[in-house]
Length: 176
Image 1 (cartoon, one colour):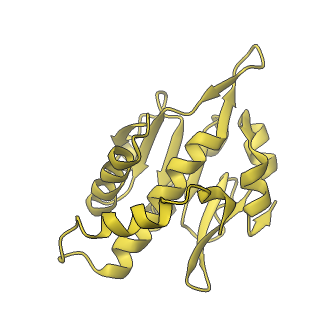
Image 2 (cartoon, rainbow, N blue to C red):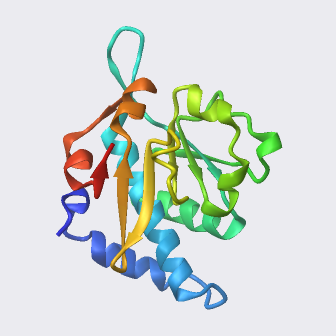
């Protein structure tokens, strides 16, 4: 079992969530959205910002540049996980106001619209866009043999003032 989801009830929990959603969403997309949401929530617990005094601070605000379907799934997952994350939806990049964001998830279909400034202002950027980690994102989620796996750009995380737990590094598909 993946150490990132060490809690024995995590798999049961994810399966239970599936029962709550309408059949209007395809099973594959719903499962992918749930898994991505679960990863983001887990990452928020294992990645911290380093303040000016060198102390670790939690990532508490997640901003989503994603469609309404993903946003709804993410909100439900945060509630069910009893996470302390607060959520802000960003439907258009022009409205992107990120000063209060700690985590920004960028859905693949919005990845071509990412302003370069996001890569320079010290945030935890995560996306399922191809080559995102190589483009200076912190974590790129990808499908690997039917599973969601991730690539972490550790040097970018450090440049962004983030402390990354060894569990995340050890479970990564690739570390850049």
